Length: 390
Image (tube, rainbow, N blue to C red; front, side, top):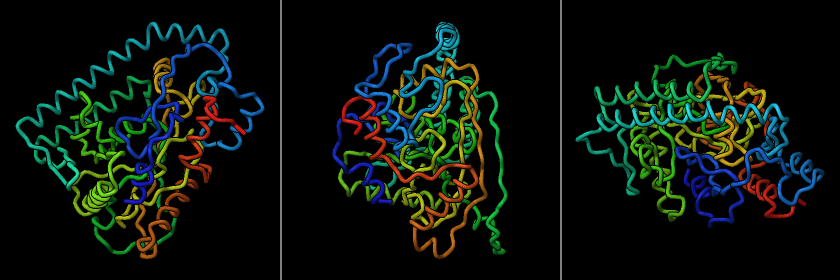
């Protein structure tokens, strides 16, 4: 995993090619710097310096990152008058109500975490100052997990995800199971495709796992304590390679611990390393598979009619506002059987990652794509007129 973490973080900061900020609780997600977008929300215009023909060429080349909803590229497509009126009404009524309710849920859960961690010292791991409250036992941990799952689902409801359709697939690989115990089948990590920051809320409501997050998240008001209760593994992207070796070891140990101990917090990893529009599956980084432990593949889809909840090629503020304006949002979840690696896959993490990726693409009807974060930066830079689309 060291190489994957270094690949995301050892590179020097590049000019702001991304148009969206990093979700606060997922370091495996897109690490591009956020860029301010103060253009009017309802003002239709083409991306800076790009002709319609150039835009079509870009969309063919970078299809995994193209928004296909009614709001168009970067959420600035031309909208009919009726849509503008509905947006205006929602901004005056639905958005304020949802913001207040969401903040209330956040504060309530923060207070629960504050009470449960009172007079308790956080667990510290490694030499890179990893700390968390996820290894607490007894009633404190039970309250944190149960209330966290419940309030995460409440928050999804507030955001318009009133129903969540879940499908559980049976094992279709036809492999014989050893007469092993439950411990042999317990996953050490959840592996999921990455579409939106909503992914994190769903997984919190479903299994309350630990995530990989930027170290700065630990210092954020409210969210910082919650992330420690989740047991997040913090990454300092500007740090030296030796620090990432320590983080890699912590993640691998956490995955192995979750596999061996049913009371240990499970890790939640997004091996694509960034978000897509939800129709594609990018190449998997091998860091999530170095532990050789079984994994639980989960596929997320966000059906939509007007605005896509996929957080890609659109600024964070614009995306949140449009999401809050949409009265009903949809999410579909496909949970595959626990994937236990063969001996060959244990010896070759890349093979393990590729096999899980192909299985998820097949079961989730996702298109395999060979592009990655570097191409995403190029696409976003071209949309913003920072580079020539040619």
